[in-house]
Image (cartoon, rainbow, N blue to C red; front, side, top):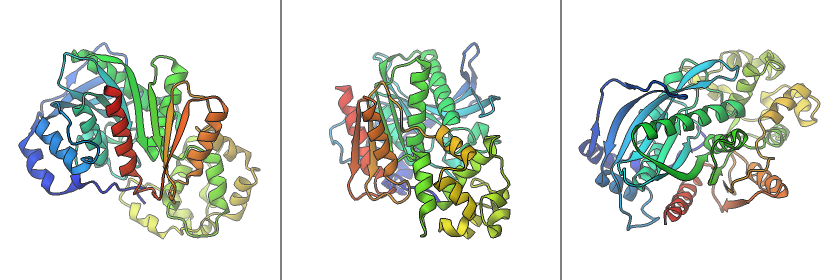
Length: 403
């Protein structure tokens, strides 16, 4: 069910030795940070040395450059104030990664993670065996300050269901994490320059687009460049295309996760599942929880949408006559807008999990609106195999921004 697995060598047992040998961790209680607007509290997690980062780099992205200088980095778990979809106050969490160098201003990166099926994969666990956390560490080791939101539903907010691919919630929680991270950076006597980069793949790509829109709507910070990849930005067209297919599709469980999120959150929906899926699968959807212990039950779900969904539901979406559902899809479309900052989209040309129509329609719509937008097609890449080339390309471009 997981949409991608980047086969990083970082997960090799070779890492265990040097991580244990070059990481200084602290289990002291978190330090309160009163009088902040977003930051609730924080705790120091670990320091990773130049040697750790150099070896980590060689095991992951060593093809980008072999002549890099590294800095010690410090990792902090952050908790911060944000809101649920309903506007209720909630404490969420994330990870801040900082170079130890105090004498220069850092560019800031917000790195959004992809779909995660376990609380233990969340960034604030600070586990370098998590590929995205490893990338955050490498970027910090090159002089960037990096914030990585967990999103709602993980770690400090794991009592809540994760609002999977819901634009307004992802935009708000990632924006508030950005605010909290900036507050902690200042509190720790580090300084930032005026550069802000946004990075994310798959759900992280969708969240990156949502964050970019939120930042520009708030007009508080300025995005320097945004790099969303392989996100399902065009919910309307993607849903209509999916529901017309009469074949097995590899992403039906995650597609149902999106539908379940919308059905639970939006009051104009809140429909019984026997109006959406066919009878054998109603009970399964009534207890749907992809992060719960029954997640393995989802293998019972047919991969063919014609076998899974009720014909009248399919018809209403494909023909656009299900106005309530179409309004919710439109509320979560984040492809047709005019960003003020440059955007570079990435997508594998053979992605069968999140179809390239999402990035292509975003590129076309943004260009039509006069945006500065580029589209990098990763030739021959599927949803999993495109992660590596995407990260290598963005890492290389970000290093170039430091020159």
